[in-house]
Image (cartoon, rainbow, N blue to C red; front, side, top):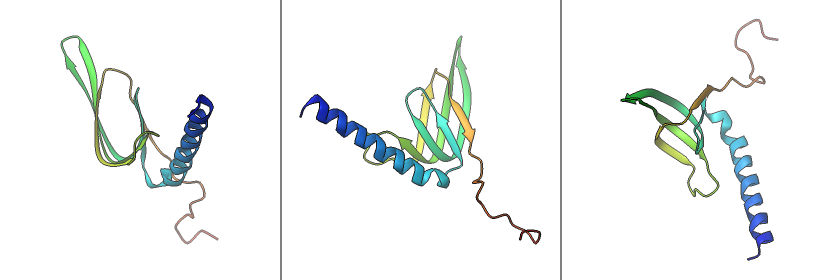
Length: 106
C-alpha cells in the first residue's frame, strides 16, 4: 500500500466518521472534549479533584458516542476519563426545526 493509498483510505474513513456524527448528534444532549477524544453523551458528571498541588478532572459519561476512526464500536455505555488537561462540556441546543408545542402554533 502506497502512502497515497493510505492517505486516501484515512480521508475516506474521516468522511465516513463525520457522516456518522452528523446522523447521531441529534440523539445526544452533551458534547465533551478532552485532549484525546471528542464525545457525544446523554449524561456527564465532572469532578475536579486534587492531590497536593496537582488538580485533575474525573469525567464520567453515560450513553456515549466516541469520535475515533480507529475504533470499531463507537457507542459506549459508560466512559470514564481522568485527565490533568482541560475538559470542555457543552449542552447541545434543541434543533431549531423542532415543531413547537401548544395551541398558539399555526
